[in-house]
Image (tube, rainbow, N blue to C red; front, side, top):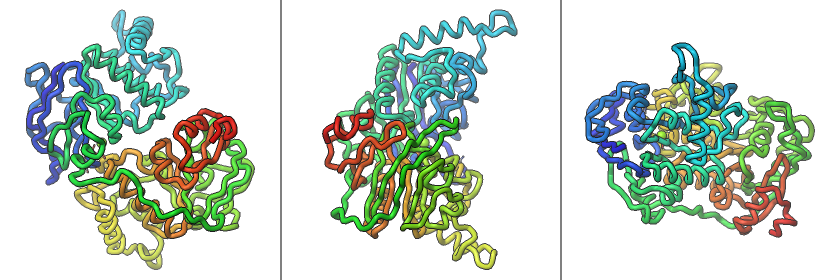
Length: 504
Ligand SMILES: Nc1ncnc2c1ncn2[C@@H]1O[C@H](COP(=O)(O)OP(=O)(O)OP(=O)(O)O)[C@@H](O)[C@H]1O
Ligand SMILES: [Mg+2]
């Protein structure tokens, strides 16, 4: 498909999210949209997919001006979108999900599942998707669920696929396979609009890069441009891609975890006897392929999941099995993995979300009465310091871009006085400029002599922040290494080798 956007403008009230955006996507092209958080990328994609109506501008498909009034229309016109939050029904099979809403019928009211299953087999083979049509979606890892979304689009003859931050939730291995799939789709003539904040990925697959800043196209770049060139084009200034740290000078143990056992949602052992110490002035980075117990481990630390056995102490005080409220009160900061579920109340204002943990405390309330001006001053300050892009602090958090929602959580957690920080994927979905800022904040927290546990599936982040790196595999710690360890040796630990066999 040849797609052309001409002068697309989209306003939300007085705010212009897309300002005269024009771009062209050729058949078989992987076209990458690069831009900072809140630049207007998702808005533009929602316009293209018929989820938002543009105020101005035209969409041309194969040279013909086309009005896309809703997403059904977009699908009929050959446009498919893989949403970042998957739209699949967990208890349905792959086939059932693929046909959902578009059931092929033999007679008028009989769904032809056999035909659908054959289609899935064929597409799955053609594009190396390797998806079992009979698998139940909730049993599939995230990377495969995403392929089901891709299959769903392909089965409706999508000629142009929109992938809005598809890699944010994937493991490095899953990312590599997705890149392969994208290449084979492009080779078959499909066009792809690809959004990511990871410059390496852009360089690896994009044919063309369009850079958007504050709703406008500010230029195009060649995939051969360096990461720092791309970064500065995106944010309009130089970005330091490495974190500067003062020398590692740890104090006493702050957090001590002994023989922790925690179950997952299905009642199976997810954390299988983990012992760890984190010291004052130290960042302990917890690396590992997602799904090896990191999520359950963190939830147990912050009182969101019961501990079966073992102990957690903070400054020598037993904090095993606290309630989330008590965890807050002892000074545990938490940046959760799932920001929309655990980090924000989307319907509440940005200002309220910024005091979500301490709404009934001074200075935000006195004798049970809210101190509105303190709440608002706090919000103004954090919005400025953390560069949270919002038209107003009274806007609901739901109206913020994905990256800006993440910044609200990070700002809230890092701005209160903490005894210990637990952060899961703290920079997921953030642009390079914001990553720089958040990393600096985490390091400053460390330099003030505090302990932190940072869980990340990004090896770059683990290596940049960690004073020591613990690797988790199948519910156990497979090794603890220095940040000078090679990527290969950490990779081996992530695959289940122990420190001895990985020879670090
Ligand atoms: N429904 C809405 N109402 C008001 N403002 C909105 C709405 N949707 C988006 N915006 C604003 O439009 C701007 C662009 O948001 P968009 O989601 O397109 O950004 P993005 O480039 O996708 O950013 P990110 O990289 O963080 O995902 C943001 O500043 C956001 O606050
Ligand atoms: Mg977005």
